[in-house]
Length: 612
Image (cartoon, helix red, strand yellow):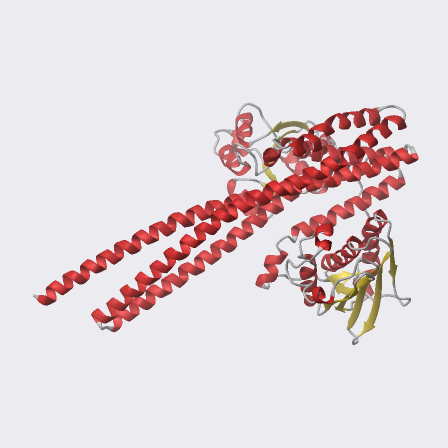
C-alpha cells in the first residue's frame, strides 16, 4: 500500500516536473522566435545600408565637384564628356536617395532637405549647361559655386545617416540583449529540471536502462545545439548573400553603362579613362564576389586559384588604379622594380592584387604629404620557387609600437584621432595576412610615428615556363547592333530597377528587338496572357511578386504561353540561385552585372528557336 502511494507521489511529481519543463520550453520557443524576428530586422537594416547609400552619394558629389572644377578651370570641350558621365552617375545616386524606401527615416530631418532636396535645382542647372551647344563657363562656375556651398550639407547628410542607422541598430541590440538574458534563465531552469528528473530516475529505477535513456537525452540535446549553430551559420550566410545582391544591382548599371559609353564616339584619352574605370569596377566586383572571405577563412575553406601570371602586367594594372588615387591627394606614387627580368610565376592574381591594393590604399589614406613607394625584390629559393618581396613605404603619420602588435587582428583600428579622421573596417589587413599565409608568406610592418610606415609582404611563388603565361587579352570590341534573327523579336523585360531597365533596354535595342517592361512578377503574369512574346528576361527580387513565383505561374498557364522561354537575370549568385531558377521553370540563368556577349548570345539563340 505504501509502495503504491509512493508511486503515485512519484508520478505526480514527475507530471508536475514534465509540465513545468514543457512550459519553460514553450516560453523559450516564444523568445527564440522573437529573437529571430529581431535578427531579421537587424539583417534588413544592414542589407539595405542607409549609410552605404549616403556615403556613395557623398562620394559621387565630391567626384562631380572635382570634375566640374577642372572643367571650369580648363574650359576645354574634351572635359565635357567626363563631366556628363560624372553628372549621370551622381544623378543616379540622387535618385536612389529620393526613391529608396530605406531613406524614409531621413526624410523628416533637416539634413535631408539641405543635402538632397536643395540639390535638385543645381542638377537641373548643370543639365541645362551641359546640353548647351557651346560651353558656358559662367553657368558651370555658378553650378560649381552652388556645389561648394552645399558641400557641408552633403557631409552632414552622411553623418545624419550614420546617426539614424546607429540608433536603429542600438534599439535592436537592446531588444536582443533582453531576450538573450531571458533565454539564458529559461535554459538554466530547463537544465536544472532535467538534472533533477534524471537523478530521480536513476535513484528510483536503479537500472542501466535509465542511464542509457539519460545519455540518449543528452545526445539529443547536443544534436539540437548543433542544429541551432548550423542554423545561425546559415543566417549569417543569408545576410552576406543579401549584401552581395544589394551591391551587385548598382554594379550592373555601372559596368553596363561604361560598356555602352565605350562604344560611342570618344577620344583616345576618354577611352583610356573608360578602360581604367572598367578595370576598377571589375576589381571591385571581384572583391564583392569574395565578400564571404571572412567566413571562409573562419572555416578554413578559402582556396586560392593560382594561374600562370605576368608580374609586370599585373603591376601595371596596380599602378593604373593607385596612381590617380595618390595624385588626388597630391602625393607621388612610384614603383621600383628590379633591373633583372621578373620570372613567370603561378599565383592567384586577384588575391595578390587584393593584398597590394589594401597596402597601397592604406598608405595613401594615412599620408598627407610626400610619397608612397612600392618596391619589388626577388630571390630564388630553389629551382622552382621564387621569393617575391613587395614593400610599400609611405611618409605618413606612422603607428605606435603597441598598436603595431595588434594591426593584423580582426576589426582592430589604430586608436585616437587617426581612427576618427580616417575610418576603416579593420578587416583589410587581417584578410591580406591570411591570404599571404596561404601563399606561404607573411606581411610585416615597420613604422616610426610622424615619419611613416613600411608594410612588407613576402610571398613564395612557384615559377612556370614563360610559354604557359597567356598573352594579355585585348579589350573586347563594343557590342554592335545585330539584325537577322533578333530583328523584330518581342522581349518582355521584368525588372523593377530603373537603371537596369535602361541598360537592358539599350542592349536589346541594339539587337533590333521590340521591348516591353514590367516592374514586378504579377504584372508579367498578366501581360503574357494578353500579348505574345518571344522571350522573357525575369529578375528575381521584386516587389509585389518575385520572379521565381511569376515563372512558376507562367509555366502553369494553359496554351503555348506556358512554353515561352524565360531567362532569369539576377544579382543573387549565392545560395544555389541557378538551381532554384531552373527548378522554378526557367530556361536559362544570367548573373548581374550583365555580360553583354552572354546576353546577346542567349537572345540570338532563343530568337532562332522561337521566330523560325
